[in-house]
Amino acid sequence: MTNPHTGGAAAPDHRSSRPRAVLPALCATQITSWGIVYYAFPVLNSRITADTGWSTAATTGAFSLALLVSAAVGIPVGRVLDRRGPHRVMTFGSVLAVAAVLAIAAAPNLPLFYAAWFLAGTAMAATFYQPAFAAVTRWWGPHRVRALTVVTLAGGLASTVFAPITAALADHFSWRTTYAILAAALALITIPAHALALRAPWPAIPEPPGHTEGASRSDAAARTRPFLLLAAAFTLSGFAVYAVVIGLVPLLTERGAGSTTAAWALGLGGAGQTLGRTLYASLARRTTATTRTVLLIAAGGATTLALGLVPGPIPLLVVLAIAAGMVRGNLTLLQATAVTDRWGSTHYGTLSGLLAAPATVAAAIAPWAGASLAGALGGYPHLFTALSVASLAAAVLALGSAIDKPDKAADVQRPTSHFQPSRDTSGPPSR
Image 1 (cartoon, rainbow, N blue to C red):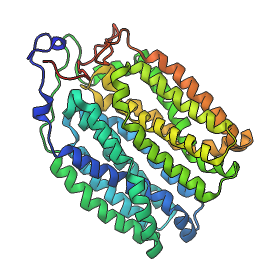
Image 2 (cartoon, rainbow, N blue to C red; image 1 turned 90 degrees about the vertical axis):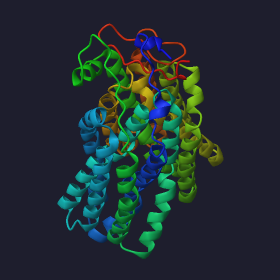
Image 3 (spheres, rainbow, N blue to C red; image 1 turned 180 degrees about the vertical axis):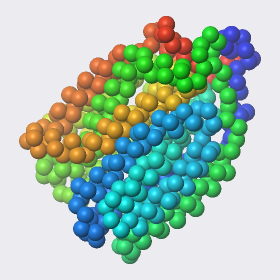
Image 4 (tube, rainbow, N blue to C red; image 1 turned 45 degrees about the horizontal axis):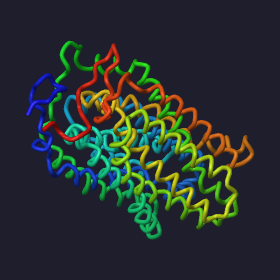
């Protein structure tokens, strides 16, 4: 059957080229990679500082360094993903992640601890959401939203699964032995899964006629006003979101909640993320890319403002924390689909890497900056009010990310005069 968007050429059948093992493999590896490389650290950090004498600021700085490295490395990783696919990238990333976790466990001093986290940041760029989203976007094509939702639902369980496992191990072993055991689990699960499940041919998406190929096209898109405004919106929104996550527990304790109740509220917010992600496909069918970007970022600001202004009771604050988590869950999928909704999937890896880099930097500095601002503003309620203003500004920036005239059914924006997107519909294939 022909496709009107490709000048009468046969539309690619994504269903026939879709490797069946990819989705379950990525679900397992996202849970494991995030759970061990990312979420084990906040569980073990107090034990690390107690054992080594290193300050909390120093160890947290190493973790923040990993996030910054991940942002920088994600850009070249994206280019490799576009050309070669995820097989070698994610397999190598898994090997590197295992080596990094073992290096963290063995680090005898702070400089080597930082070096190990530098390696971990590189591994994050090659194994976390960005390459997984690139794989799903290219292989699932028009049906990517459903598959992306499944992967992010699994990724959202990483802390639920591995935080208690890490804590249980740490109750019986030193933090170094705990990390070594987790590294073994990381090796057993992620290396073979990526090596075996991602071997399928990487679907080629031809360049539209009349345009330069390769990096020059993606670089041209990245210099457009809509891309720059969208990157700015995601960066400002990401800063607010991560500062809220880190600040939720101290906010609730300032409101009178006990530490256990505050921790439960944070955990229930994570459950809210999972619930929120199940609603994204329905939202995507009913809105254009720009509309849902503005709506979701504004909704994040609204829940943040409510948390800052509502003094209680505590059960109401917990409900607001769950609502904020639901918005965060949708924001993850919003960023995963932002490139294809506007510029197609041909250069998804490159453009998503460029789009994610400043937001990842914002996420890295948010814990420190949020705590500093809370002190300067006079408490966490005032911080949350300020963060809601940042989200509102991000929503305003997102208004400028529209690309001329959106297709009303397919959620694919038509091109600007200086960049032609790949034609990749987000509705059902042509019949």
